[in-house]
Image (cartoon, rainbow, N blue to C red; front, side, top):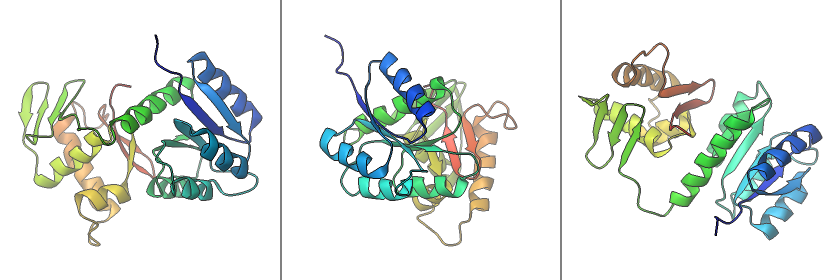
Length: 232
């Protein structure tokens, strides 16, 4: 017997995108629910309990961020934002308000499904014992021992460099906003700015990247934050 089908709720009012998402998910054995406005979406989310939600920010009856706010009052189901270009401010707000990830339109099906797999896996791990060792493409991080290796050579990081990497490892494959990093690494210090984060990311890349100018592990999501590649 195979794994049970996952249920995805698509909240989107552009019919071409709805058709694209429906076909993409059905091909991969997902059940698909569709809503073209916020009210219908909230009703479906409450009655059908989807495993994952894709949410467009530009809905005809209410702002997507308001839908997200209402969803987060009662559900922890992963939410991936679908965003038009040039809305970095909305993306940051969405991540800070509880979204798990975002995709900028237009997007490809391979990237979409990779983000979905990461979000579902992260949701399944919630409440379970965290996997202590992360490995991907020559980078190895032992969270229990606070040790890092690059191509089998141990790297020595400063406390803040390590804490920054550890937050990214725990969210591997997902975008982490600068605000979230400041909160978790620097405990919300008012003296820590986005520029401070960029400096530490720059330093970290020089420790873990074969070529810091063209990073393959630690990617920048412009105007939003950073993502540690996980292989999905």
